[in-house]
Length: 179
Image 1 (cartoon, rainbow, N blue to C red):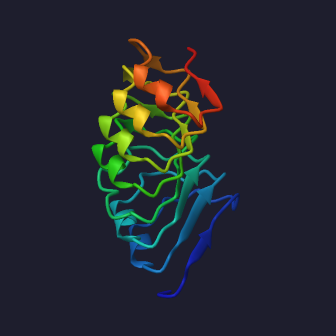
Image 2 (image 1 turned 180 degrees about the vertical axis):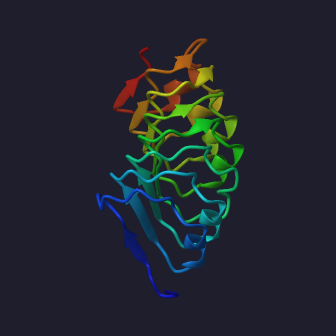
């Protein structure tokens, strides 16, 4: 399948895991596993899909952590790992995904802090990490996300004050930080 660009497994009643060989389909630009009961972890081979612009693995029973190596996915504009059972922290490498426009990590069991490298995602217009176990302060680097339209961080364990850099978010229309 060397020429396959679009692979969509939305609501296919799949209850398997994502195979490691998925990383061999090098021409993929869109990969979607949504609304199934897919289990297991996100394979590290995802990082080999350097042409990906959209990676949606949402509404499943994926566990484990967000892969530590996502740095090769520089064309990615949409990353959606929402509504799974992901745990652990958000990797520092998330800052390498500088083409991202939308990042959705809602409804998981993600813990740790929001990495300072989040401020490198200057093309983001949607950032959603609600309903997790994220703790600590919102990083000051959030002020670098000047294209941000929506910011949803509610239902976490955030502490501290809202960083003054939030005042730089001139495009922001919606922000929720409630518990």
